[in-house]
Length: 213
Image 1: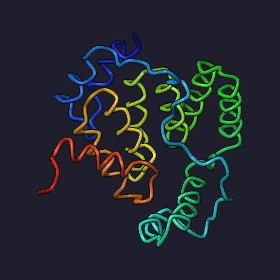
Image 2: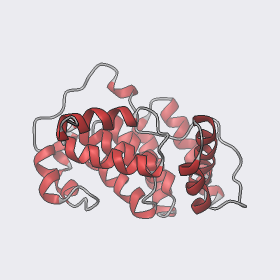
Image 3: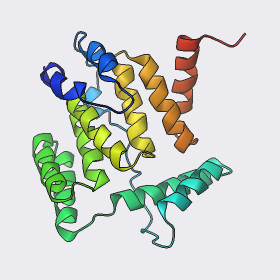
């Protein structure tokens, strides 16, 4: 299985996982594949994004995201952050990303991955290429490679709440609930308005740390 195949690479993941803790989690039996697994995805950008606003940098937007007074305001700021992350650094990268999306829409995942490989080779600092490839590996149950790509995202942007939430999802699926909770909490520290993540934090906190007396 793909998960077993990628153990060696997974052990090298330094971000919050700690080599000593991750290997045992993934060394268990392959996680069951529930119905509809192939439809599951790591957190991604919303379908509609505003134009990139170059008058506002990411530091400003992350500050605005934390201070957002309500859900609607937060989603507006979140979309502007995603717009910056997704903005392609070159016409060639943009063309390859568009072709990768077309391949995904046609359920040609391996082709999409090869196209993203080309983007990453061309523009290794382009966060969204790593993030999308992580999603595709996740859809294939290849958690080792998905985690490796999430790590690359977080090296370049530690505030990437989508990657942090995705890290939590994978850790939860492989049974490492402590690290799942840690990742979810980091995601919420950056973006307190993430969908469904507060419920996951509440449930895992009660399970791992117990209810408040």
